[in-house]
Length: 65
Image (cartoon, rainbow, N blue to C red; front, top):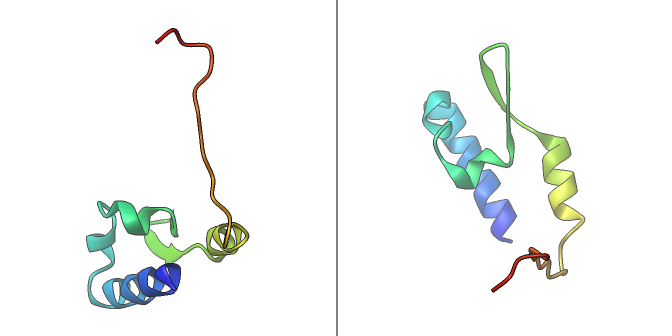
């Protein structure tokens, strides 16, 4: 549901002013910039959908605390 909300807001922002989404970190993972055009990266959306229902934890090992 959160991803669908982000994509809805992204589509609205792209319709109004495509350059306004460049600095938005929430939109960044779903956008693609090619030849000056900003579009929704459907492959990134599909990759994100694969993680639905999963909790991902990243750690850094090898450091002394």
